[in-house]
Length: 282
Image 1 (cartoon, rainbow, N blue to C red):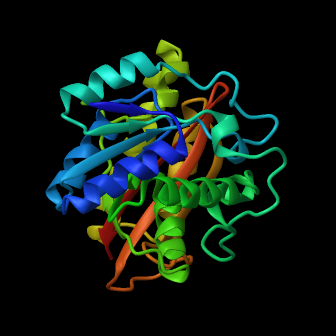
Image 2: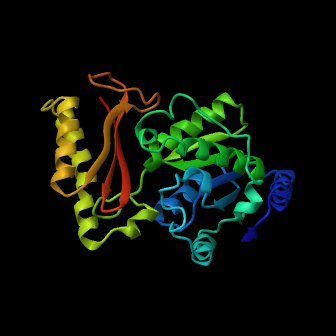
């Protein structure tokens, strides 16, 4: 497995793979990998990638000043050990100085899907995400890009960016991966105390119960949203948002549509912000 730290070397490596006729898949991450990240490698392979490149970069411009950039977990050696066991071909792990000139003035902005949900409390977050992913695409030159369903809004924003800016890339959204007890896998789970982690199980349980109640005709979407909020509060969580949206357009849904919809939520347990979602046709 090759470990690359500069954009120039990364581009040279990718061009060499392309000359060999290989299809390149990119799995962008911020590191401190877990089974959810590793499942994205499998998804890339299943979707035709001959050469899988995992990027590890904690992106400063998607963090607000009051967020956890400085304490975000980092362990490149551990990550590389995990990726080598998955037969990943290359890891691109640039420095902040390598990725950004001082005071960058050219940013990538998506103006519709990135406005609600997480953007209500993190207004500059998706601008940082689209900008860094565009830069990673230009460094790695992939044919396929894989993102996880856990970051549901992010995946849709990036899918729209690929469409609107004509990136020659097929974007694949990989299923959300959970712990055995239902907690969505996240690098931030390590911040939770034992009690907070136990209480956070209310997120996945409430989403599942809402889906089942709607499918059985026992509730409305509005009532399901209120129940989820009340359940979170009863477990000591602080609700950021709970919404029901169309899974592609992210527009609010309040009645039966026959389309795929998504309950999405964000909540704090202690100082840790967790997100989760569930997809189904309704």
